[in-house]
Image 1 (cartoon, one colour):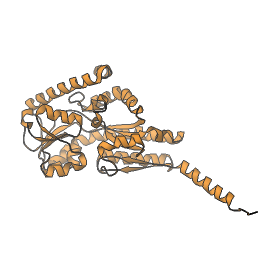
Image 2 (cartoon, helix red, strand yellow):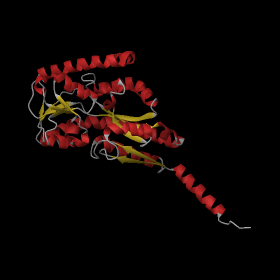
Image 3 (tube, helix red, strand yellow):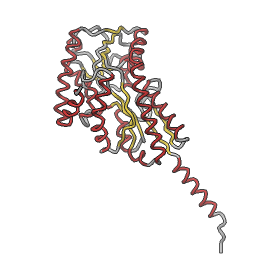
Image 4 (cartoon, one colour):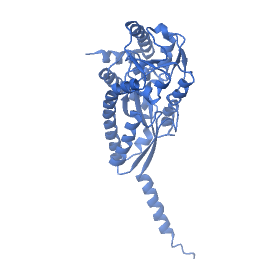
Length: 325
């Protein structure tokens, strides 16, 4: 009879390897923004906090600057499990459901306090929507209030007619339509090249986007309309999260809560800093004229009515809760 002295050793080795595999999890977390952007820096710190809190049991690799998936692909990647987690701009997915578009409605929430209240009253419906797709929110962080970058000086919305306008979401495409601009679909990773070639002459975004993309090299005017405060959400695949042990789940949620609080503070601190940096690099920061501000508020009124019509009773309940003192 053939003796098999190594079988117990092999079995023990395999069991040990399996135990190690179960003990350590590895997540990929793609984001569309560059490493120096405060959203990305915040996520990298979140990953470090999780690593430290779990003693290395959960390793999260952050893939910045759309290097793993492009911005429009990240949500689907998380939903399908191609990436365990990922960061999205909520307003980018307005075509899926009006709830995603809420923080991109102009002049609904224009301060950080209003933006936080809007998020708080819409968080439940948003979580329910994502849960149906097998996704869980880890944390949400705002951008700075949105203004208009434009090559020429403008005094009213009529001055934007025919301008090549970067449309990176359904909301920004709708604004282009309402002011008569020419929408061009360009993601942030390609924005610098598009401005340099003249494919983009204007867009609405925050000071951080203008700085990150070196907008000041091609466009010299920024109108601080403070139109809305969009938010990024860091999502996780629900199955990937549920596969973690209880202690690791708790560590992730605690690190996420810390990242959310830190991100909101940094967003507010950076708002004035970015405008100063843009000015130092040749950008003229304008206070919008009364006419321009009035024109853009009219755009906001149309878009708020559009949103309420699309969102129905659920949307009306959110707005009612938001407007309560």
